[in-house]
Image (cartoon, rainbow, N blue to C red; front, side):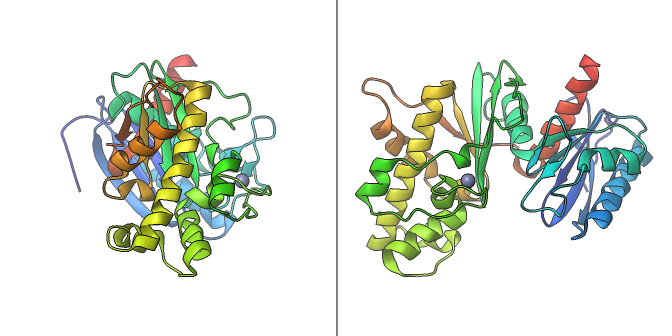
Length: 309
Ligand SMILES: [Zn+2]
Protein backbone atom coordinates (compact mmCIF):
# COMPACT_ATOMS: atom_id res chain seq x y z
CA UNK A 1 0.00 0.00 0.00
CA UNK A 2 1.55 3.35 -1.02
CA UNK A 3 2.14 5.53 2.03
CA UNK A 4 3.60 9.00 2.33
CA UNK A 5 4.07 11.23 5.36
CA UNK A 6 1.72 13.92 3.98
CA UNK A 7 -1.40 14.43 6.10
CA UNK A 8 -4.82 13.57 4.61
CA UNK A 9 -6.48 16.50 2.87
CA UNK A 10 -9.46 15.07 0.94
CA UNK A 11 -10.99 11.69 0.14
CA UNK A 12 -12.64 10.14 -2.88
CA UNK A 13 -14.56 6.92 -3.34
CA UNK A 14 -14.65 5.31 -6.76
CA UNK A 15 -17.86 3.28 -6.90
CA UNK A 16 -17.77 0.82 -9.79
CA UNK A 17 -19.85 -2.16 -10.80
CA UNK A 18 -17.39 -4.65 -9.28
CA UNK A 19 -15.38 -2.74 -6.66
CA UNK A 20 -15.63 0.22 -4.32
CA UNK A 21 -12.30 1.92 -3.75
CA UNK A 22 -11.88 4.58 -1.08
CA UNK A 23 -8.79 6.76 -1.50
CA UNK A 24 -7.27 9.43 0.69
CA UNK A 25 -5.26 12.25 -0.89
CA UNK A 26 -2.78 14.77 0.49
CA UNK A 27 -2.72 18.52 -0.19
CA UNK A 28 -1.21 17.92 -3.66
CA UNK A 29 -3.87 15.29 -4.38
CA UNK A 30 -1.30 12.52 -4.37
CA UNK A 31 -2.76 9.28 -3.05
CA UNK A 32 -1.85 8.59 0.58
CA UNK A 33 -3.65 5.30 1.08
CA UNK A 34 -6.63 3.34 -0.23
CA UNK A 35 -9.07 0.58 0.71
CA UNK A 36 -10.89 -1.65 -1.76
CA UNK A 37 -13.99 -3.83 -1.25
CA UNK A 38 -16.29 -5.67 -3.70
CA UNK A 39 -19.52 -3.96 -4.81
CA UNK A 40 -22.61 -5.61 -3.24
CA UNK A 41 -25.42 -6.44 -5.65
CA UNK A 42 -28.41 -5.34 -3.54
CA UNK A 43 -29.31 -1.76 -2.71
CA UNK A 44 -29.31 -2.02 1.11
CA UNK A 45 -25.96 -3.82 1.10
CA UNK A 46 -24.56 -1.22 -1.31
CA UNK A 47 -25.58 1.69 0.94
CA UNK A 48 -24.12 -0.16 3.95
CA UNK A 49 -20.86 -0.81 2.06
CA UNK A 50 -20.58 2.87 1.15
CA UNK A 51 -21.10 3.78 4.82
CA UNK A 52 -18.36 1.28 5.75
CA UNK A 53 -15.93 2.87 3.29
CA UNK A 54 -16.76 6.32 4.66
CA UNK A 55 -16.08 4.98 8.19
CA UNK A 56 -12.71 3.76 6.96
CA UNK A 57 -11.95 7.29 5.68
CA UNK A 58 -13.16 8.82 8.96
CA UNK A 59 -10.88 6.45 10.91
CA UNK A 60 -7.89 8.12 9.18
CA UNK A 61 -9.06 11.72 9.51
CA UNK A 62 -12.48 13.03 10.51
CA UNK A 63 -14.42 15.52 8.43
CA UNK A 64 -12.33 15.48 5.25
CA UNK A 65 -14.06 16.74 2.09
CA UNK A 66 -15.37 13.46 0.66
CA UNK A 67 -16.51 12.87 -2.91
CA UNK A 68 -18.11 9.80 -4.46
CA UNK A 69 -17.60 9.10 -8.16
CA UNK A 70 -20.09 6.70 -9.73
CA UNK A 71 -21.56 5.89 -13.13
CA UNK A 72 -25.02 7.18 -13.94
CA UNK A 73 -27.09 10.25 -13.18
CA UNK A 74 -28.69 11.81 -10.12
CA UNK A 75 -31.78 13.88 -10.92
CA UNK A 76 -31.08 17.40 -9.66
CA UNK A 77 -34.65 17.93 -8.36
CA UNK A 78 -35.63 14.52 -7.00
CA UNK A 79 -32.16 13.23 -6.05
CA UNK A 80 -33.12 9.89 -7.62
CA UNK A 81 -30.38 7.76 -9.24
CA UNK A 82 -30.45 6.40 -12.79
CA UNK A 83 -27.63 3.92 -13.32
CA UNK A 84 -27.09 0.81 -15.41
CA UNK A 85 -24.32 -0.91 -13.44
CA UNK A 86 -25.42 -0.41 -9.81
CA UNK A 87 -28.57 -1.65 -8.01
CA UNK A 88 -29.49 1.95 -7.16
CA UNK A 89 -31.82 3.10 -9.95
CA UNK A 90 -35.03 4.71 -8.66
CA UNK A 91 -33.50 5.29 -5.21
CA UNK A 92 -32.39 8.51 -3.50
CA UNK A 93 -28.88 7.08 -3.44
CA UNK A 94 -26.70 10.06 -2.37
CA UNK A 95 -29.16 10.99 0.40
CA UNK A 96 -29.29 7.40 1.66
CA UNK A 97 -25.47 7.20 1.75
CA UNK A 98 -25.26 10.49 3.69
CA UNK A 99 -27.92 9.22 6.13
CA UNK A 100 -26.16 5.87 6.66
CA UNK A 101 -22.75 7.51 7.02
CA UNK A 102 -23.99 10.33 9.22
CA UNK A 103 -22.15 12.98 7.23
CA UNK A 104 -22.43 15.05 4.05
CA UNK A 105 -20.87 13.72 0.85
CA UNK A 106 -20.29 15.14 -2.63
CA UNK A 107 -21.64 12.88 -5.36
CA UNK A 108 -20.36 13.22 -8.92
CA UNK A 109 -20.64 11.25 -12.15
CA UNK A 110 -17.43 9.25 -12.58
CA UNK A 111 -16.68 10.56 -16.09
CA UNK A 112 -17.15 14.14 -14.93
CA UNK A 113 -14.81 13.39 -12.00
CA UNK A 114 -12.26 11.93 -14.40
CA UNK A 115 -12.44 15.06 -16.59
CA UNK A 116 -11.91 17.31 -13.58
CA UNK A 117 -8.95 15.20 -12.45
CA UNK A 118 -7.30 15.14 -15.88
CA UNK A 119 -7.76 18.91 -16.30
CA UNK A 120 -6.45 19.76 -12.86
CA UNK A 121 -3.73 17.13 -12.33
CA UNK A 122 -3.35 15.06 -15.51
CA UNK A 123 -2.97 15.17 -19.28
CA UNK A 124 -4.92 18.42 -19.77
CA UNK A 125 -3.15 20.42 -17.07
CA UNK A 126 -2.29 23.82 -18.54
CA UNK A 127 -4.91 23.71 -21.29
CA UNK A 128 -7.57 26.44 -21.18
CA UNK A 129 -10.27 23.82 -21.65
CA UNK A 130 -10.41 20.05 -21.94
CA UNK A 131 -12.91 17.49 -23.00
CA UNK A 132 -12.37 14.06 -21.44
CA UNK A 133 -13.92 11.17 -23.34
CA UNK A 134 -14.27 7.79 -21.66
CA UNK A 135 -14.40 4.96 -24.18
CA UNK A 136 -15.44 1.86 -22.27
CA UNK A 137 -18.53 -0.33 -21.90
CA UNK A 138 -20.34 2.99 -22.31
CA UNK A 139 -19.37 6.38 -23.75
CA UNK A 140 -19.44 9.49 -21.59
CA UNK A 141 -17.17 12.31 -20.55
CA UNK A 142 -16.92 15.76 -19.13
CA UNK A 143 -15.91 19.25 -20.20
CA UNK A 144 -13.70 21.44 -18.03
CA UNK A 145 -13.08 25.15 -18.62
CA UNK A 146 -10.54 27.07 -16.56
CA UNK A 147 -10.19 24.16 -14.12
CA UNK A 148 -13.93 23.74 -13.41
CA UNK A 149 -16.59 21.54 -14.96
CA UNK A 150 -19.00 23.38 -17.23
CA UNK A 151 -22.17 23.93 -15.15
CA UNK A 152 -24.80 21.42 -16.22
CA UNK A 153 -28.48 22.23 -15.52
CA UNK A 154 -29.67 18.64 -15.21
CA UNK A 155 -26.34 16.83 -14.95
CA UNK A 156 -26.76 15.51 -18.50
CA UNK A 157 -23.80 17.41 -19.97
CA UNK A 158 -21.27 14.70 -20.77
CA UNK A 159 -23.64 11.92 -21.85
CA UNK A 160 -22.07 12.07 -25.31
CA UNK A 161 -22.70 8.37 -26.02
CA UNK A 162 -26.36 9.13 -26.62
CA UNK A 163 -25.82 11.48 -29.55
CA UNK A 164 -27.29 10.00 -32.74
CA UNK A 165 -24.96 8.11 -35.08
CA UNK A 166 -23.81 10.05 -38.18
CA UNK A 167 -26.13 9.14 -41.07
CA UNK A 168 -23.47 9.26 -43.80
CA UNK A 169 -21.15 6.78 -42.03
CA UNK A 170 -24.06 4.47 -41.16
CA UNK A 171 -25.22 4.53 -44.78
CA UNK A 172 -21.74 4.12 -46.30
CA UNK A 173 -21.10 0.93 -44.32
CA UNK A 174 -24.71 -0.32 -43.99
CA UNK A 175 -24.36 -0.29 -40.20
CA UNK A 176 -27.24 -1.52 -38.02
CA UNK A 177 -29.48 0.81 -35.99
CA UNK A 178 -29.55 -0.85 -32.58
CA UNK A 179 -31.72 -0.23 -29.51
CA UNK A 180 -29.65 1.54 -26.85
CA UNK A 181 -29.82 0.87 -23.11
CA UNK A 182 -31.07 4.45 -22.66
CA UNK A 183 -34.37 3.68 -24.43
CA UNK A 184 -33.50 5.36 -27.73
CA UNK A 185 -32.22 3.76 -30.93
CA UNK A 186 -29.09 4.39 -32.98
CA UNK A 187 -27.07 6.10 -30.25
CA UNK A 188 -23.30 6.52 -30.81
CA UNK A 189 -22.69 4.26 -27.82
CA UNK A 190 -24.32 1.27 -29.54
CA UNK A 191 -21.39 1.13 -32.00
CA UNK A 192 -18.43 2.97 -30.47
CA UNK A 193 -18.37 1.54 -26.93
CA UNK A 194 -16.33 -1.65 -26.39
CA UNK A 195 -19.42 -3.83 -26.98
CA UNK A 196 -20.24 -1.53 -29.94
CA UNK A 197 -16.93 -2.31 -31.63
CA UNK A 198 -17.77 -6.00 -31.19
CA UNK A 199 -21.19 -5.34 -32.80
CA UNK A 200 -19.55 -3.73 -35.85
CA UNK A 201 -17.35 -6.82 -36.28
CA UNK A 202 -20.26 -9.20 -35.72
CA UNK A 203 -22.38 -7.30 -38.25
CA UNK A 204 -19.68 -7.06 -40.93
CA UNK A 205 -17.90 -10.43 -40.53
CA UNK A 206 -20.27 -12.66 -38.51
CA UNK A 207 -17.48 -13.23 -35.99
CA UNK A 208 -18.04 -12.99 -32.23
CA UNK A 209 -14.97 -11.27 -30.78
CA UNK A 210 -14.40 -9.08 -27.75
CA UNK A 211 -13.15 -5.53 -28.15
CA UNK A 212 -9.81 -6.67 -26.73
CA UNK A 213 -9.49 -9.45 -29.33
CA UNK A 214 -10.45 -7.05 -32.12
CA UNK A 215 -7.81 -4.54 -31.05
CA UNK A 216 -5.18 -7.30 -30.98
CA UNK A 217 -6.22 -8.73 -34.39
CA UNK A 218 -6.56 -5.49 -36.38
CA UNK A 219 -2.91 -5.37 -37.54
CA UNK A 220 -2.98 -8.81 -39.20
CA UNK A 221 -6.58 -9.29 -40.31
CA UNK A 222 -7.87 -7.18 -43.22
CA UNK A 223 -11.59 -7.61 -42.39
CA UNK A 224 -10.99 -6.63 -38.76
CA UNK A 225 -8.81 -3.70 -39.86
CA UNK A 226 -11.75 -2.46 -41.97
CA UNK A 227 -14.07 -2.68 -38.95
CA UNK A 228 -11.52 -0.77 -36.88
CA UNK A 229 -11.39 1.96 -39.55
CA UNK A 230 -15.20 2.25 -39.41
CA UNK A 231 -15.02 2.48 -35.61
CA UNK A 232 -12.40 5.26 -35.95
CA UNK A 233 -14.63 7.13 -38.42
CA UNK A 234 -17.58 6.94 -36.00
CA UNK A 235 -15.46 8.07 -33.04
CA UNK A 236 -14.04 10.88 -35.21
CA UNK A 237 -17.60 12.06 -35.93
CA UNK A 238 -18.22 12.23 -32.20
CA UNK A 239 -15.06 14.31 -31.80
CA UNK A 240 -16.23 16.51 -34.71
CA UNK A 241 -19.63 17.13 -33.09
CA UNK A 242 -18.00 17.89 -29.74
CA UNK A 243 -15.49 20.23 -31.40
CA UNK A 244 -18.26 22.22 -33.10
CA UNK A 245 -20.26 22.37 -29.86
CA UNK A 246 -17.61 23.01 -27.22
CA UNK A 247 -14.41 23.73 -29.17
CA UNK A 248 -12.15 22.18 -26.50
CA UNK A 249 -8.42 23.05 -26.40
CA UNK A 250 -7.69 19.31 -26.13
CA UNK A 251 -9.42 15.96 -25.95
CA UNK A 252 -8.32 13.41 -23.34
CA UNK A 253 -9.09 9.74 -23.93
CA UNK A 254 -9.79 7.42 -21.01
CA UNK A 255 -11.50 4.08 -20.43
CA UNK A 256 -10.81 0.50 -21.51
CA UNK A 257 -10.81 1.09 -25.27
CA UNK A 258 -8.38 4.01 -24.91
CA UNK A 259 -5.72 1.39 -24.11
CA UNK A 260 -5.69 0.25 -27.76
CA UNK A 261 -2.15 0.80 -29.08
CA UNK A 262 -1.85 3.66 -31.64
CA UNK A 263 -5.35 4.89 -30.81
CA UNK A 264 -4.24 8.52 -30.59
CA UNK A 265 -2.65 8.36 -34.07
CA UNK A 266 -5.59 6.46 -35.61
CA UNK A 267 -8.17 8.83 -34.13
CA UNK A 268 -6.17 11.96 -34.96
CA UNK A 269 -5.99 10.81 -38.57
CA UNK A 270 -9.72 10.01 -38.72
CA UNK A 271 -10.63 13.26 -36.94
CA UNK A 272 -8.53 15.25 -39.45
CA UNK A 273 -10.72 13.84 -42.25
CA UNK A 274 -13.95 14.72 -40.38
CA UNK A 275 -12.90 18.24 -39.40
CA UNK A 276 -14.02 21.34 -41.27
CA UNK A 277 -11.64 22.26 -44.11
CA UNK A 278 -8.70 24.28 -42.83
CA UNK A 279 -9.34 23.43 -39.16
CA UNK A 280 -7.28 20.73 -37.47
CA UNK A 281 -9.01 18.67 -34.76
CA UNK A 282 -7.97 19.47 -31.17
CA UNK A 283 -4.89 17.64 -29.87
CA UNK A 284 -5.91 14.16 -28.69
CA UNK A 285 -4.14 13.04 -25.49
CA UNK A 286 -4.14 9.97 -23.27
CA UNK A 287 -5.43 10.27 -19.68
CA UNK A 288 -2.64 10.11 -17.09
CA UNK A 289 -4.50 9.57 -13.82
CA UNK A 290 -4.61 5.77 -14.00
CA UNK A 291 -6.58 3.94 -11.31
CA UNK A 292 -6.90 6.95 -9.02
CA UNK A 293 -8.34 9.40 -11.53
CA UNK A 294 -12.10 9.22 -10.76
CA UNK A 295 -11.58 9.15 -6.98
CA UNK A 296 -9.10 12.04 -7.24
CA UNK A 297 -11.59 14.08 -9.28
CA UNK A 298 -14.36 13.33 -6.76
CA UNK A 299 -12.08 14.33 -3.88
CA UNK A 300 -11.20 17.55 -5.69
CA UNK A 301 -14.91 18.24 -6.43
CA UNK A 302 -15.65 17.78 -2.71
CA UNK A 303 -12.81 20.16 -1.82
CA UNK A 304 -14.20 22.77 -4.27
CA UNK A 305 -17.74 22.30 -2.93
CA UNK A 306 -16.57 22.87 0.63
CA UNK A 307 -14.77 26.02 -0.49
CA UNK A 308 -18.03 27.35 -1.98
CA UNK A 309 -20.11 26.44 1.11
ZN1 LIG B 1 -28.58 5.86 -25.87
